[in-house]
Image (cartoon, rainbow over all chains, first blue to last red; front, top):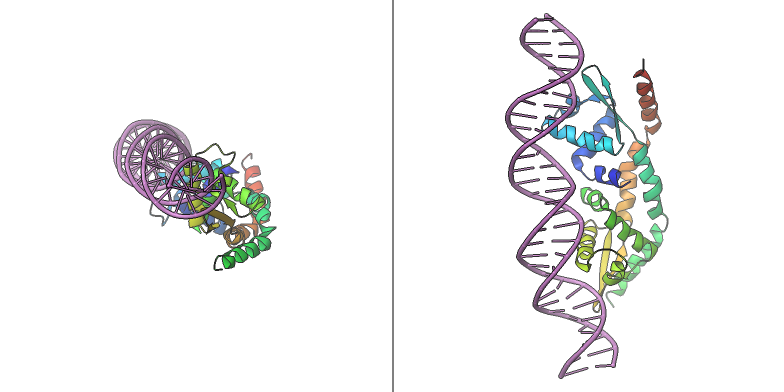
Length: 104
Length: 104
DNA sequence: TTGACATGCAACCATTTGGTTGCCTATTAT
DNA sequence: ATAATAGGCAACCAAATGGTTGCATGTCAA
């Protein structure tokens, strides 16, 4: 779980996921296109995404195809975000109440 | 958005949010209890959470009360995670297909 | 078979991060 | 008044992070 949060903490990595979301199964060089980074930097980012199981790769000859694995993102939604959804309104209400009390 | 992701990337900070989720409106010292960290380290974490708008504080005499603001978490769920929910099954299907093709 | 293409590996670098210690200030209780 | 309590500030530090460059390797096409 921690690895997933850490992987998502970087904007470049999130944009790589976005690109794979738009078109799955891209090669390393395709994913580099248009990014203001060297290929090696992208390689490192993809390694982190792979480590976090957000991306799965398949070698196909001299190419390496990258596929998005949406499960970890889904799990963060289920196991973490939803916990804060419950009680969200209560927390907001309390926050509002306390902010108002401040001005007494 | 980036600030929120970065704030959530640290396990200590997520645990602080958990604690506030369990009991809202705690003081700095209360939040320090049981953590293997100095008070100053916790202060820094809370500052990052505050910066990301995940926590709002109210001074009350010499105490500083910390309140959870669940909105940024909610927004990440809405604006980011849900995007990957759509097409999740398609992506998983394609992933499976490619993984099988690998063994041909 | 030889050159071009796709990727991998390793060393290096600056900056950020997560933490510490030491001391200072403000508020409350005795 | 004074001691204890709650928190703030600043300097410092080691390790992690995000990036680079240079070179090596494997694979495909002419």
